[in-house]
Length: 111
Image 1 (cartoon, rainbow, N blue to C red):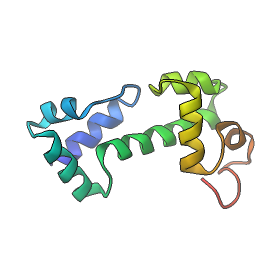
Image 2: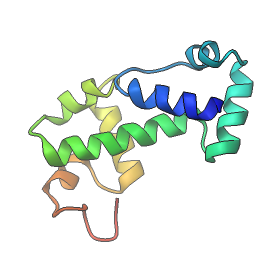
Image 3: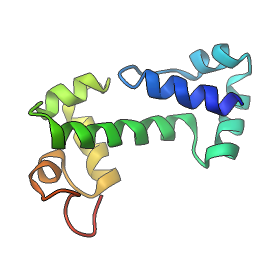
Image 4: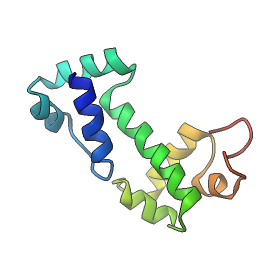
């Protein structure tokens, strides 16, 4: 039950950098309990889940809008576009601009 609440909260606050403290206050559990329960139920920590959400949302924005990488980075709450680009490439195998330019679905065999 807590994991469902936490996932929904993270999805609804994708533009913010949600802290473990906020999550623990939301479901009245300690930060370590949050991480343990969330990882047990999803296979990921809340942070990993949140980054995955942001990357998926970033992919949609790259394919479906004309927003610049800087704007997408800011929209998703990253400190700068270079960090967003670094994480995007790490998670998808493509830079944001390569992903945007590729046919639908990205570079074959990649993110």
